[in-house]
Image (cartoon, rainbow, N blue to C red; front, side, top):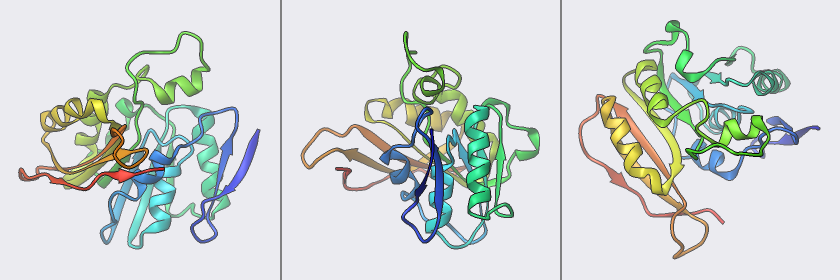
Length: 220
């Protein structure tokens, strides 16, 4: 069943479907991890309902345009209706395609890419396919994601993503393999003194070495 929920930023609203994958607080943390630069052209990979791109746009001035990339037709169409609901057709584009198959016209077009990707490597034996595609690396691997981001970013452009904390080494290695230099890191924990469950990472295409490690973010 579809519901319209307030974004709790101004009058923005987002359409969600209780039968499809619903966004989590990790998406909101990612949207708040970086601030926009003037004239920012943003892509949201694995956009789902469009929460990361919409939330980032709502909280930042100076965003020129946001492109949402989502492979599942139902979620992509829902994102288009959210864009229309908020009268943002001139500011948002929705592309229904796999990240690995983003059209060549988007090569080196973005100054910022945001991504809340599938976290898990193994698929579900008994699970809803739509939700499994959002949670598991069934159709997109971490390496494929980073390679696509490297192609679509301008030189000096930024990539920000959230991933499981225990996969941080994989993330950093994948980024450097595509000449995306990790520049900002923040672990996320459910409560104070708890073991972090996620990591927020930002990298710069062609950036110099030097990683800023922020205090642990408590999400609870």
